[in-house]
Length: 107
Image (cartoon, rainbow, N blue to C red; front, side):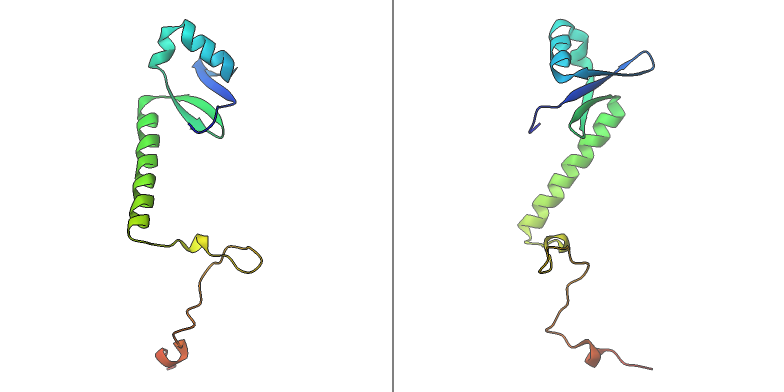
């Protein structure tokens, strides 16, 4: 993780118990059963999940990293990277090199 989580949510008695990250670290040091629990980061917190959710989360994350790397290797640009003079994200980019009126025929 790039940052220290604020809280950790642990499954206890059918629900989630909220712990500060420091309390979570202390419990993990004192109780070895915490080492078998799986957590994913969600909005600056750790959330205990089952193995299937953990696997899905990290599979999606690795896929996203792979696609970003492919984009960089092929020098692809995202439309989201383009903004107008006021800093708003553009919905489309006008190709001024092509005159559309010449290619479109009105019937």
